[in-house]
Amino acid sequence: SLSIGIVGLPNVGKSTLFNALTKNDVLAANYPFATIEPNVGVVGLPDERLGKLAEIFSSQKVLPAPVSFVDIAGLVRGASKGQGRGNAFLANIRDASAICQVVRAFSDPNVVHVDGKISPADDIETINTELILADLQTLDKALPRLEKEAKLRKDRSAAVAAAKAAIEVLDGGTTLYSGAAAAKIELEHLRELHLLTTKPFLYVFNVDEAELANESFLDELRALVAPAEAVFMDAKIESELVDLPEEEARELLESIGQNEPGLNQLVRVGFRTLGLQTYLTAGPKEARAWTVPVGATAPEAAGVIHSDFQRGFIKAEVVSYHDLVEHGSMSAAKAAGKVRIEGKEYVMQDGDVVEFRFNV
Ligand code: GDP
Image (tube, rainbow, N blue to C red; front, side, top):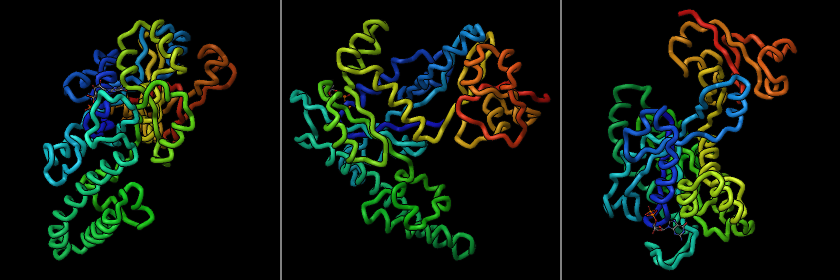
């Protein structure tokens, strides 16, 4: 499944954030894979539409789309030179589809900073440098093999060219995600290498609660990472919020000028960074959000529920969430001509409420 790897220097609040994510474990019962790995936390994508659907269909339960976070321990300054546990973190990070970098911006003098000073810009550069160095090592190691293969198989010379161009980009201090397109590198030739800096990044700035409403401060941090997305939170507050009853949690959020937990924003931004969207199904049993890549067709979307649904796909009955809610029930939406019959070519839209017809 698609997951987001959490990285960052020691003492920036990764564990605090990760614990808050995993305590939020309402999903564990429904997504058994959530409890298998201790370093994986599965969080539901906050989606107000599901509650509304559950009302319309009298659904017994609500199942949001799961988003997995993986705690990638061990990335420290000098990891590529064997510091800390060296490159042991690589095994965990290779499978992640996006990388979430946690950056310290909180000031607490009681929490030691590994480099002795709080500097988000320097910390980001340190982490990026380690990821770039890790990719350079991977490429340097692979290049002789790719060159040997290219002597035997002409079609492998594209991989050699891509590897050399990638080394040049990385040597210039740029990640492949930012630099590959401009350098015209065809990254698909290097896919087998699972290069870390080809993944999209997002950033969590762990800030003091007092700064959460300080827009000019947040804008400065945002500018450090743009065009990547930034989420701001106080990880300590987030870890307290997940332990509080709903009403008290709301009061605490209000007292720091926020209308939702930072974790919710993180899950949403993470989902978007992964290039995903959701479609919805609803019935008396459950109202549920299903995850598909942006651009997925109706049969591909059916396949997310069950591979048999994709193989035997006939058609999809589709109504947009907005139209359904406006008319208040499926039958009223039908009577108003808002329920469409869509075929194999249909490209799914976020918020489609769907029923699939298929042969078994
Ligand atoms: P990690 O090494 O990145 O996993 O960092 P931890 O989550 O273990 O946090 C390191 C220390 O910083 C712990 O003592 C945390 O309680 C503290 N800490 C984490 N987040 C915050 C925060 O937002 N504000 C403050 N003041 N302390 C924090």
